[in-house]
Amino acid sequence: MAIDHYENFPVASLLLPARLRPAVQTLYAFARGADDLADEGDADTATRREVLERWRLAVQDLGAHQTVRVALSAEDSVIFERLRLTIAKHQLPIQPLLDLLSAFIQDLDVTHYPDETALKDYCRRSANPVGRLMLHLFGATSPQDIEQSDAICTGLQRVNFCQDVAIDQAKGRCYIPLECLARHHVTLPALADLCQNPPAQAPAPWQAVLREQARQAQHALLAGSPLAWRLPGRIGWELRLVVLGGLRILEKLAAGGYNPYANRPIVGRQDSFLLCWRAFGRPRPAQDTALPLSHDT
Image 1 (tube, rainbow, N blue to C red):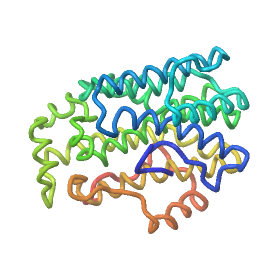
Image 2: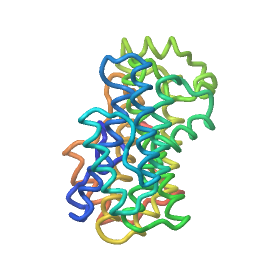
Image 3: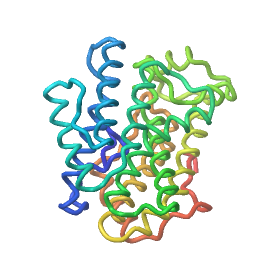
Image 4: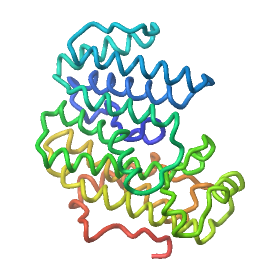
């Protein structure tokens, strides 16, 4: 489970069948590369948009079974040649790739989200396509599979929004809906100050904000979790660890008093035994027996 980079992608772990690891690595390289184009380096917005638009046209070419006609850098050309072979070998759909690019392009202009509807639409394009591509690799594409995969991916994305509030704020972004901030009487300038001067204990209004957002993430993960316990073999085990890893981060967020500004919660090696025990030795967590999300319970 890659928590610190492209958070929702299981990057070809040993649990995945060897025959699928190259495909997963190729999809990761595409997603990571596109995300970096939107976020990393010192290029201006116009340059980022131009390159991402070239990627979008290149994906459309692949979808039409054509040779990529747009000009790409040598490094990008390698990514797209691998992507072409992967799409052809596994008969992958193009739309999830286009959805990912639309989210990364949106990141160039949109820095705040007014409400839950807008945030969920962003997650639909920035996170859910990853799960859908994985399902296609494993031939598990029933409507129920897709619905639960979408819930897991949205949940993981929202976990990341909770743990990375300060990191996102440093980039001028906030993935907490403005309506949620207003409901708890928190302002964006107050967030900026909190992230720049992290307190030993988060103020009560900010604890309330993140507790609400953590519950939204938890609800999505638990809603999608039946998929992880239903899929057979290695993909099922992989997905169980992904879901449980997200829930573990939420546990740590609660235990830390909802204060990721001073203490960003992560899943580390010390959590490996606990997660394996939960994945292999315990029943699936039920929606009505959700893990407590208060550090005082």
